[in-house]
Length: 460
Image 1 (cartoon, rainbow, N blue to C red):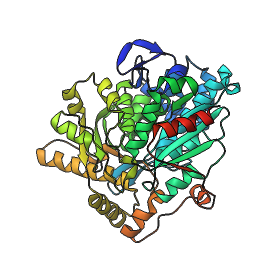
Image 2 (image 1 turned 180 degrees about the vertical axis):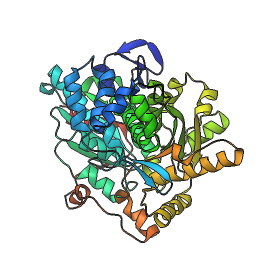
Image 3 (image 1 turned 60 degrees about the vertical axis):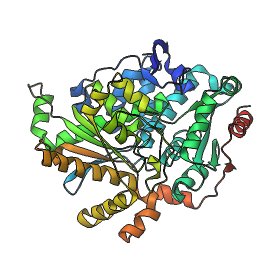
Image 4 (image 1 turned 180 degrees about the horizontal axis):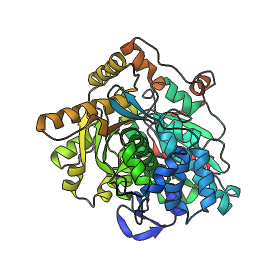
C-alpha cells in the first residue's frame, strides 16, 4: 500500500517516506491510497484472544507490503501488550483506553509507531547513519506517550515540546524523567505555539536537508492509523455483551445483520475521532460519531455554521484538548470528500466549560462510583446530552448502543479531581515511580531559530 497527501491524491509515497516525512511536502497529511475492507468475522474471532491479536490483523492490511507480516505481528504485539476494556459507568458504556504504559489512549498510536518505525529503520540499516529525530508537540498526553513509545529505540531521538506551566505535574514528569534518547523542551507559550514550531520545521526545506526529522503527533500516519484499531475492539466487546446471540449466529455463518454503535470521542486535535471515521469506512458498523470538546469549540462551531475558523487555544482543565487549530480537520475533510452536509449527517459536536466538566466528574463519582479524568468527563456529558436530544425529538436512541471513550487515567489529573471529589485518585505504580526521578528539560521561548539550533546539535 502507498500513501498520498490530503491535498494531492496523484502523488504516492511509500510507508517509509510517509512516516519519516510526517507532513507531506505540500503541507497536507498522509492518507492511505485506498481503504481496505475488513472481514468482520475474522476481526471478531481474533478479538476473543486479545486486543493485540486483533490489531495485528488490521495492521497487516496497511503495513504488510512495507515490512513482513511476521514483523507486523511482532511489532504490534510488543506495542499493544495491554488491554482496553469496555466497562459500565452506571448505565453507560465507556472504553477505557488508559491501561497502557503512560495511562493515556495515545499509548496505542505512539507505541505502535515506535515499533513499526523502529522495524523500518532496522530493515533499511538507517540506524547506522545520523539519528532520526522524532519531533512532537503536546498539550499533555501525546508527549509522554511518544517518549515512552520511542524510549531507548536505537537510531531515534525524541524531542518533545510542551507549553510551560500548562500540563499537569505528572504529565511533565512523564516527559522529563526518562532521559536517554528523550529530550524535553518547555516552551514559554501555548500548545498552538508548540504545534506552530513543529509545522515550521517541517515546512523548512533547508533545515530538513540538514536534519533527519519526522513527527509523532497524530499528523503522522503511523501515529494516526493504529488508533482505528480500538474502535473494532470496543465493538467486539460490546456485541459480546449486548448481542451475544447475534454474535454466535454471525460467527456460525448464519444470516445475521450486525447492529450499529455510536461513539462519543473527547476531541482536541481530532486524530482520535478521524481514526474512528476511518474504521467505519473499513466496514465497522458505526451509526455515527459525537465530538465532545472543551471550551476550544472550533469543530462544534463548524458543524453549526459550516465555517471553519481556527483561533488561539484557551487553557482549560482538560488540557490535552486545548487546541484551537486542529490539524486532523484535513483528514476529516478528506474522508468525507469535503462534503459538509455528509459530515453533519454522521457527526455531532458538543462543547463544555470547566465548571460543567467538574460537575460531570462529581456526578460520575457520586452516582456511579466512577472516577473520570476531565477529558473523559466531556464524553460522559456529550453522551447524556445526545441521548436527551434524541428523546426530546422522538429519535430512537438506546443508552446501551453508545460508547464514550475514556482517554486518560484520572491519576494524571489529581490536582483537578481531588478538590472536586474529595478523594485522591489511585496512582498506578508505573506513574508513581516517575515522581521520584530527576527531571531534565530545556526552557525556550517561541523561536524557530532556537528550535532549529537544538535540532542541528542533536542531529549531528
